Length: 329
Image 1 (cartoon, rainbow, N blue to C red):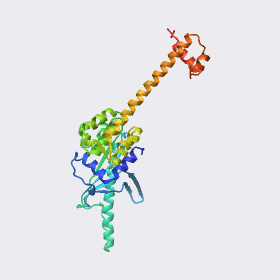
Image 2 (spheres, rainbow, N blue to C red; image 1 turned 135 degrees about the vertical axis):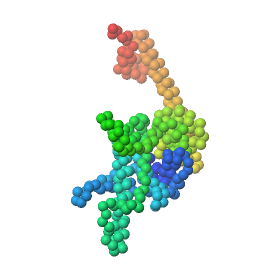
Image 3 (cartoon, rainbow, N blue to C red; image 1 turned 90 degrees about the vertical axis):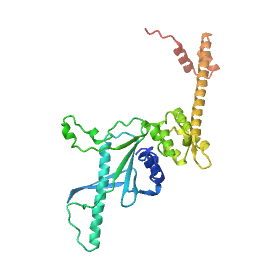
Image 4 (cartoon, rainbow, N blue to C red; image 1 turned 120 degrees about the vertical axis):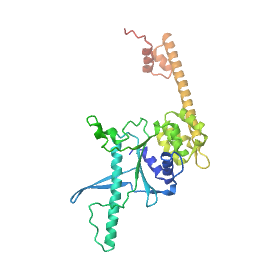
């Protein structure tokens, strides 16, 4: 796990932030899920394969798992944070989801077995661990991709399979498995603006992390995106120019919120000042070189020029060499 993913995972462990993500992603900004509906879920998934003595246990970990809803019907969302492109993602997500369903089946079977023992009955010996009336909880996996390169990997299982020598009729019998990917840096601004304002601001900051002028323009055009919570800024900062952090205090209000327009303006202003200073420095350097060449033309020795200026004899010699005409044909 990279340094950028860790603060993002911590951020979405908060039920309120996770509700923002679900409402923006699944419900396109409609407030359908409240933080109180979100409960923590064990991120460790364990599945067994084989029977009798020949069994193997497989364990997988998701970055975040939550349940939404009551104990009867709830939604499990595992959000995989990727800063790299995983070309096997459809199989990986399918494996995660399958393990989650296997865990549910095992839990139902174990509960029924323990209830029978507690009541003094012998556990039922069934070929199937589930009964006809049993139901599993639906699983949704969301892949939040924040890399600079576009997501060019498969978004469904069929895109990974080689059908070149398979009759078309057989293809319809091969199960497909689509996955849900949100490619932050290559999603239209209009779609990102459907998220609650803190997430919309964060996603736009990540999208335009190397184009502060565009970010400034977008933020200025939508006044409600001006301020974000301190925790949102601190999380987004991991994707931005690290100099942004020193403008945080100047952009913070009494509530602790950070005005992103002020922070971005400060960043751009510093860039302009540094560019101006570099220009002045380069101008002074060129002026000094011109003066040295003029001294040489007036027959001053390199040692004499070194004594007058702050240049060493080697630096003066290099200036002289650079001014020699190129006689290479």
